[in-house]
Image (tube, rainbow, N blue to C red; front, side, top):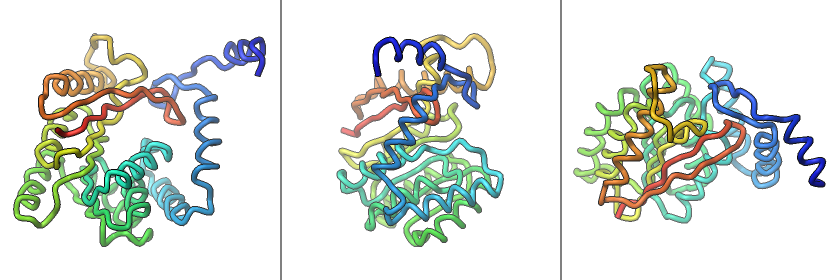
Length: 254
């Protein structure tokens, strides 16, 4: 693409409003679609199960706020090269991410927590149809009520310490979930907190009490607290894609 053509394209495809109010761009969506179509084509063994889970979630009226395919596959690959045997997800939605993780890692078990009973029901149906229900424990309840019970299970040896945690739930409790994840993890485990960039407004102090401002405050709290936490080393990676401009915090347990 020549420079002049690029400039014209950029001017004509200025950042638009995404469904959740975050900036978006057609190039980001097109790039995600192009790359995943080649790097995870329909010939992959788990492609049908993932597609079916998305369709079943949509048919049951679940919101279109799930983790995109590139991010979910990245988490699955993280489990693979990290030799993770037990992963935690806070915020199940339709269970698509646990299907990614377990279908790409035959020895992996996933504990996933979902507050909304309807979402948890659909997630259980999805993992059952995907053939991984024996390795995905979908727990219905508030994360801060469930996590102490998970700690008891780990301490009793009923479940292994966590090798990976993915936090994608109510943003106001980001730090509380992160703190629990560290306690439940083995050294070298990785923790991801999604949606911390919030369309690029994370560096700006919130000025009101809107939903978006509360999400920003939750993201700022976890970033600032993790920066003081001697149990981990962390960074924030900005991302663009079919879910707009955002990013996640990644931490490694020391």
